[in-house]
Every structure is written in structure tokens, then in C-alpha cells.
Amino acid sequence: MKVFASKSKSILLVLILAFTTGLFFLFNPTERIAAESDMAGRIAYVDLWVIFNYHPEKAKAEIELKQLAGSMQAELEEKATGLPKNEQQELLEQYQSRLTQRERELVQNIIEIIRKEIAEFAQEKELKMVLDKNNVIYGGIDLTEEVINYIEGKYKEAALEDEENTAREQADIVEVPAEQENNEQ
Image 1 (tube, rainbow, N blue to C red):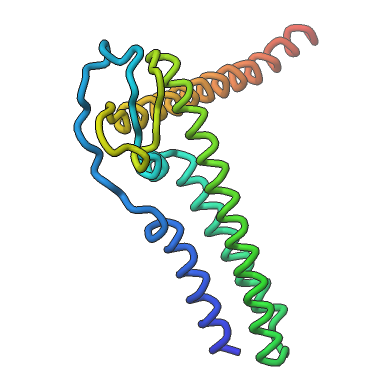
Image 2: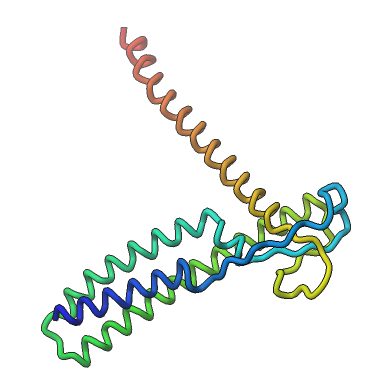
């Protein structure tokens, strides 16, 4: 059983590592051709996988996958106890399939979010078109870094708003007992 557990742990670790490093290659974005003021009506491109690797949702997805893999590992070890090797192997394959499916779902969700954010950025900058870097042979403006900065700015704004809302809620909670005390007197 220990051989099965260590083999399944190794396989799950490989899957997680493949998600975080092996699936997506980090390319160095080329320099931007034009200044931001010259963007209106222009055609630009971005390296979608570079943006993916920097996106805040990727870190959340990695944490979710790691937790899922851990819970699945424990569940697998529990269910596989006493099963014949061929049934253990089938069970392992089912768990790997479920983990891979969830990984695909998470990646697809992040890609959809990124596409929406790129569209927002393009509308703000009045760009004519934004392509994926893999579809560009010549020309265009590489806006990968600008889109990353735009996304990071959005997430920082959202985090600040969350902090302010939390602070307001905590202030409201502190004030309520004081109001109740005055009403009781």
C-alpha cells in the first residue's frame, strides 16, 4: 500500500507542477512600438500566457488545486486500502481525471476573465484590434506589460475597496452597542 500511496502522491505532485510551470512558458515581451497617446485606432497584440502567469486569479487557482489534490490524496488512500492492484490503478486514474478536469476548468475561467479585461483595456485605449501574440507575424504594438499593469491596478483597487468596506462594517459594529447603551439608559 505504501508503494501505491507514494506513486499516487508523485503523480499528483507532477500534475500540480505541470500546472504551475510546465504548461505555460514565460516569453519575454518585446518592446512597445508606440506611445500610449498613439494607440487610438491601432492594432495591438498581447502574450496571453504571460498575462495568465501574472494574473492574480492564477495564484488562487493553484491554491485550490493544491488543496483539492491533498484532499483527493487522502480520500484515495482511504478508499484504496485493501483493494486489488488493478482496482487501485482504476481508482487512481479516476482521481487524476477529476483533478485534470478541474485544472482545465480553472484555466478556462481565468482565460475568460483575461479576455474580458483585455477588451476593457482595448476600449479604454480606443484600440482597433488586439490579437494574441501567436497570431502576429509582423507589426502591431505589444501591450502585454500594459495589460498586466491594468489588471494589477484593477485588483489593487478592488482590494482597497474591500478593506474600506470591511473597516466601515467593523466601525458600524462598534457603534451599534454604543447606540444600544444610550437607548437602554
